[in-house]
Image 1: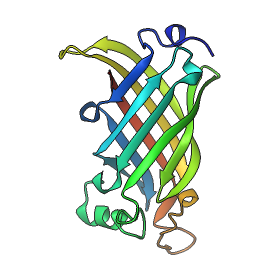
Image 2: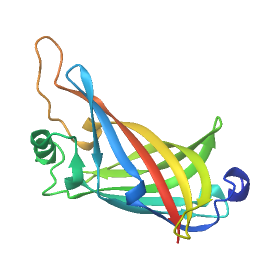
Image 3: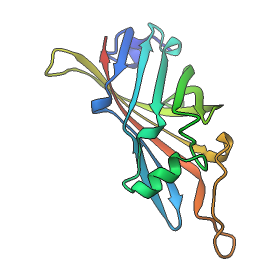
Length: 183
């Protein structure tokens, strides 16, 4: 795939820690006839950049109780055993299995664990560059997206609607906006 210097100028080998104050973990799911959006406000992680991009890795841990959909009743239900079961599964994790380039896009293959179930996912990643911050650090910016089927992680809750409809869609779109600081 190539050296990190040629595919991501300025991104040097080493550890880059995710800055949660300047990063976002968001999602959307169909609810009735529109989409509901939400975020997780407590998370941490690191990116290990290798000389060869394909050897780079990333890990993340998300505190599921930090869910925020801007509706307290809905948040309480999503945290319950019906959906994410925060009491028994307080964290969601991601760990890479590989990085690859395909058709001009960077793909991050990894394992996502939700509710104690681990399944493979692929994130499409966009690199936004590297720059100095006002505090003397060096930052890198990334966006990443994927779509998962919640049922693959055992999240079956739904409410049937008149006809063949259901309250919730099965697909969940996940979006990440990440600033990482060189350690």
